[in-house]
Image 1 (spheres, rainbow, N blue to C red):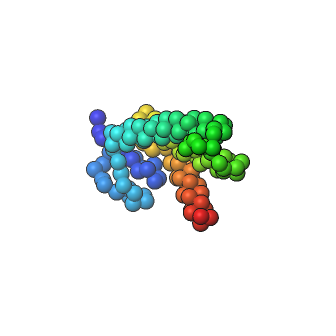
Image 2: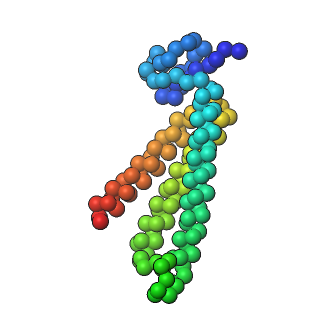
Image 3: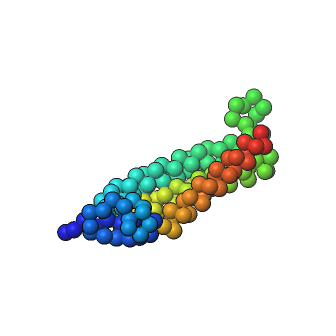
Length: 138
């Protein structure tokens, strides 16, 4: 069976031995390499979701229990702080879920899903914008 190479940018496919896409100049990758990268995406996404979920549960307990004044795990923020924490955690978990979905897609089909890639970059951009905003406020 011929080795099929595909371009992630424009979805061009060929069985010829090329390194660059003749349509857009993007790098051509074999389905095997894309599947390996899919497993990596799935692993990273799963790790993010599990870690942020566990951290969210832990912080949720700290936020909802006032504790005593000598406790080192006492939350002293207000409602806006809670909303910001929930928003950041939700975005990171969304990024992890999109990574998992993209990885599963790549494993099954041997090529990336452009819509999922755009979604991951949008969420990452929002996270960076929030980080810049927090840094600017401090």
